[in-house]
Length: 188
Image 1 (cartoon, rainbow, N blue to C red):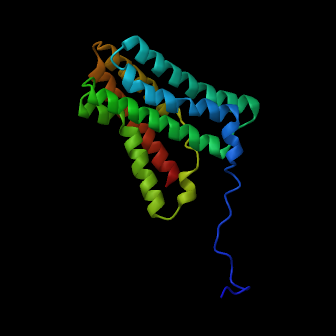
Image 2: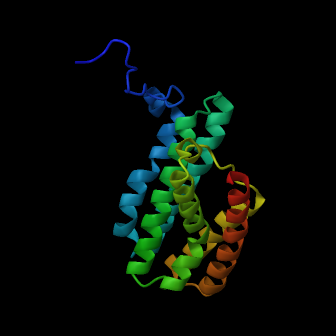
Image 3: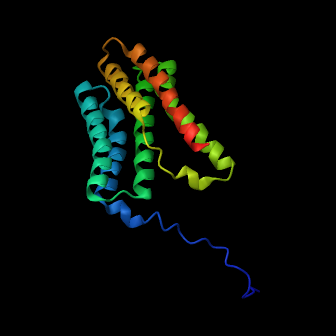
């Protein structure tokens, strides 16, 4: 029998994460990266189409944050969704480039160095029982933006089979680790 004095164990949904925010323009722009990610493996053998998908994803990533700030629609759900769709797109692109031998394993790991550290950081935060911290937005700093730019260059070089891919991957890895160190310092 349920006692009237026993506290209700059901947790109410976090009011910061309103599902209606998914219908706001910034979230819709973030969600565009999901079908683009699903499309990438089918166009990777056609460099112009692959670069178009990559460019559209990059544009949606720039626009979602700009529109959110411009319209005053920055939300916790939007911040989490932006990061999640970024990671999904990067994972699909990197995996596709590895599977099609446009990137070697070491190059892929260098490109994903920042993301791998962030994944480890998320695991540490979760194990420490600080799950709410997982949902906090990690603002990109100079190093993060620089790493993203060089990652983009490396992916373009991989898609087009132009020289310099290995160097771009190495630079992206180094910048990514510097950016990740900043994220770890702020989080811990």
